[in-house]
Image (cartoon, rainbow, N blue to C red; front, side, top):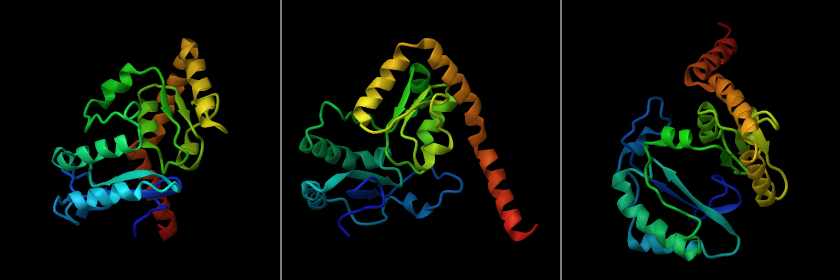
Length: 212
């Protein structure tokens, strides 16, 4: 199928990139570790994807993996994403920084974490920001509603996301004490979402279902 409605808001074009060297424990798709899995990413394929992005009803582009930003994958993916960014006239708004290993340092240098996604399965990036002691600006829906609380974790956006997001950033930027209070609350709350705690909770569900 040429279009996708499962991996993001609206009708989208999605590209799944195989290849990953992380080999994470409990990975639910270890077959995606293989860099040779799937079809070759040719110039013809890239042109087809660019053409598929042109209709007005396309809401966006989703990049999946595997790990699309593995160094080996970047050689083919980066030039294509640069073409797509130019086609959408987003050169001033999209910055392709590659695979980063310094996320803790980046979070430690930040004052606010803003993730205005309308839909998130869980929103691990926001949980990582909470663990780093940052206040959140999010849309409270789906996965984020399990930890995003208005006035406690930060600001929960509604309506016009551009306006409400700008207002939330301004309020937090002007109030250092509020940032610290929300950040401290988030750091404590994030411990409930650790891998160990989640695994124990999941084990309890299975034991209850099996009557053990």
